[in-house]
Length: 385
Ligand SMILES: *Cc1c(COP(=O)(O)O)cnc(C)c1O
Image (cartoon, rainbow, N blue to C red; front, side, top):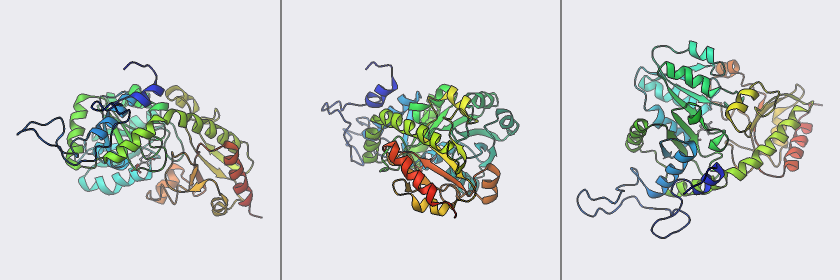
């Protein structure tokens, strides 16, 4: 099939038509095993942990969208990260961006540490500072850009160039941007990971993870790990993701339009002390982000000025739902220090700037005036009289 644009690839990429019947959607192959026509005579599939046609269609789609050699689908974003980090060995160290997703931190800090795989928090925002953190045992870097929850931007190309000079594997968590807004492999990444639970699924109805690797060699290693550790995505959830990805472009266009309006509203509001959104020209990551991504994405975090009761703010929101997660069509809000980032020890949270007053918004695709009215009402209600 020939096309040149990602909007089209979202719909027709990977394996989009069922060869046998012509169905325009890949069927849900809800089967654990496959008939063999004789000893060693398989028709391409043998057991669904190893390979399933619905999952394979999704894996081909995400590989195409990210411009990688192969894709892999897992039961969650953290299962994808677990598989990718399993490429490391005892004694290896990974550098991680200074505000990564709390679960990524916990995975390294409380699980991989059992196996002697170490991590160092590195200020990847500053490539020179990052290079100083590369000791002999460092074998990989895991970047989030924008990083969660302060939306700090890492110059992916600059960090990847330095990392490659030192022989490191470059892993980018592209959950917040998706390949529609940012394509890390083109910027030098070796592996891209996703919590597909977020924008790729897009409807807050599936938990899933994806990984895309750049080379055949990495594909062979990760396929082996995926099959050996077994955290694969079921056929029905694979179908839901394929379905979600078809509308990613139109959803994100609207999400971003709303996010820009919300960030501008918050910036102009006297009750707001700080706004973190890389799509605002005043944001410190704006220039770098503009070079490497289509726009500033959707996620915003902000703090209210003194004299506002944050608990009251959360209680007074009606439309915007207080919940973990992000990236669904509905607007969600969260309190990173007690929710998404609670597993990061307080002294580290303080050091990287995740204050108790920080509020994180995932702007949905509702009518923007309803979103702004809800924010306005809750900000007013939170004033301490
Ligand atoms: C949610 C999230 C994850 C974890 O993904 P799950 O699907 O919840 O396991 C990893 N990275 C980022 C940036 C996330 O937002």
